[in-house]
Length: 312
Image (cartoon, rainbow, N blue to C red):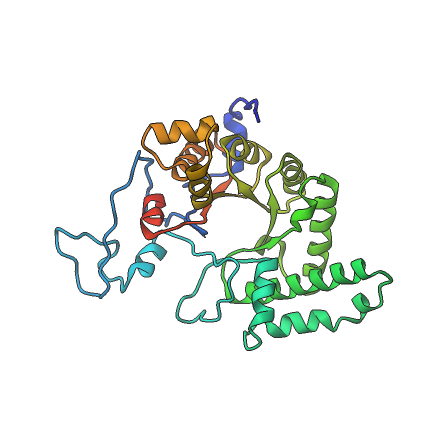
């Protein structure tokens, strides 16, 4: 796979795309910088040691935020936490700032009848307009679209940030089908009065998916490109204007353990870097260098040190 990278956008275009500090994203979680924090790109970040209590840290064990109660509090000071593929009812104790609604989430809801989202699914399955469709495929598609939008609508009420809605991965190689699906989902969101600026649409980062993201972003519809495993994909997604680019850190590492022949991954390993973390860093630097608006989201994080390495 090859990619011919575009030249940097003009200063005027860069200035019109985004002003102010860049907001990166981290770890199945998204990492947004706070107004009082300036991030600098380093080759590696120091390990973060966080006390499990609210007591002040000793000089030999620095913490993030002296008044933080635990590691989650410390990470939340620098990160936007985005639950994905889980049913997470404890919003009062661990309030996320954004969320993702997907087929995996719907499956989890169906397996947990007491979850607060179950009514959203039941209402979709009782929809008369879906039940009256002629074919089984059209009925199932209608029920699914209603369910995923109903749950997304509930999540919008629970989180202050954006909710990302998964687009059927079976459409990954059909640009027009992806665009039609997003328009269909957006129409359903309009029916329940969810503002467009609270929504993202999660699209596989195939070449067709990236082109669909470009078309949708040109309409003012925010996109979230996922399944990014190479710099070529990340750079193309940034050039397309995707709002969020999701890189699977752990999956790249898992693949690298059992495969060879990918020069990008082998170059990272030879330089002593984790291939997933190296891709996030390279993509981050590229986005900054050329002034693209995209946020980075690092997902499939396997351990806490990965997360701490991604902060900033």
